[in-house]
Image 1 (cartoon, rainbow over the protein chains, first blue to last red):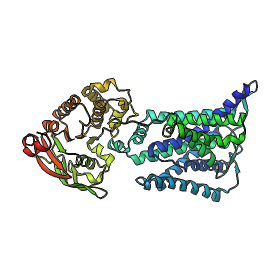
Image 2 (cartoon, helix red, strand yellow):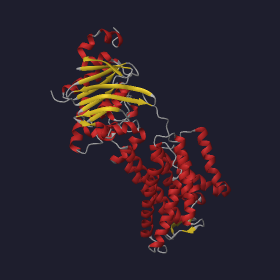
Image 3 (cartoon, helix red, strand yellow):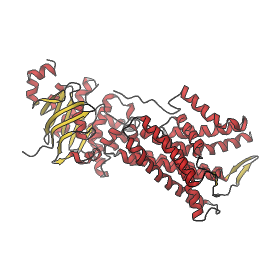
Image 4 (tube, each protein chain N blue to C red):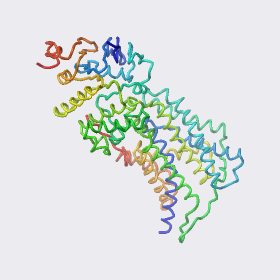
Length: 300
Length: 237
């Protein structure tokens, strides 16, 4: 039982990291109906941005809350700038092209970032600066609540609450949902869809930036291909929850995080990655719209 | 007489190789209800879309003596042109209130928006009961009312209505046309696109008849109601 609770904690912590990245996939899908495969590489660039920034101002050996927050902010800024550039240069010129062209472009951007990363940063893994000390905050029996897990959970939760507030309580969030529902009608209301789409990339990418620092803190080894697996899993999480649905992405990510942790604990860590894609296959067969996704019915 | 509020000259629209509008010209004066009537595919909706800037067009578009073609789609609302689109286009996953707030997106005068919201709710009391409800759960007639009030929230000088009677029960259609008439009596200039020619002509001052992308007739609504060709083709008499 105590083991189970411990796995539960680890799973939720892993799930919140997936959620931060899955949100970027689902938001871009919601507004452009495209899968932004480059998203996971934006996340990778965020981790490297934080790494180099920490070395540059000399806080790589200075663990603490201020280091964590500084790196998160730096990573968010770099990721949102990169997201903005990708949208402007790669996706916007294809706004009215067939979906397949956009999809192939997205894969191209992804490969471009991965292999440019290997040239610029080097292919060998780097050790992410020690952002925080990992210590046991409290323990009940054998169950340990560690500072990393709490940090991941708290930061992830704050980011998701901020997103919720942005989407549902602000004017620009309302415009984002309107463009997502019907860009043509939204432009009749005076919304500039291009600007809203660019803003969506900024928001999604900066959430990936938050995720990259949290992952760097928890698994302090970063390399230019680090985005591949976690990106695929976050993508599966977004599909599982119902792609395009913000709440669904968080739900899907939590299910992914928990089930991965449980499989590793009770079956074998060999199945860790197989599980994610098993879930994808099952969901595509039995509930292709995802858990919270709906086929919308329009009244005529 | 002063210059018309909206002046359209030689409007041409192509969808790929299809020539949808062929040199359409007309004008709408301040305070008028003007109808564009015609069969399916005559180019009525396309005309409204060109005015709002959703489809690219050739020809001249002038609103209050300003060349509309230099103004991007999303800025035309701010100039005073609001459209209730064909098929209503409400945002189904947003509440009625949020839909109305979207209508006022281009405005920044909080007090004025609040006043217009109350005005809309007075005009369509049914909206008031449903403010928190998702727009997708409304009935067709309610969605149409929402689409019209959403356009009104932009505080337009020219209201474009695209097929407000589409797919609605006769009783609801009559209600909606009553409200359109009332809006006009309060000073709103309206350009109405309709297949239901009889209803449209009854509340219009003037009307134009479109056929296969060409303007084939224009007259006062009263004369068109008595015109033999119109009676035969569009009124089914």
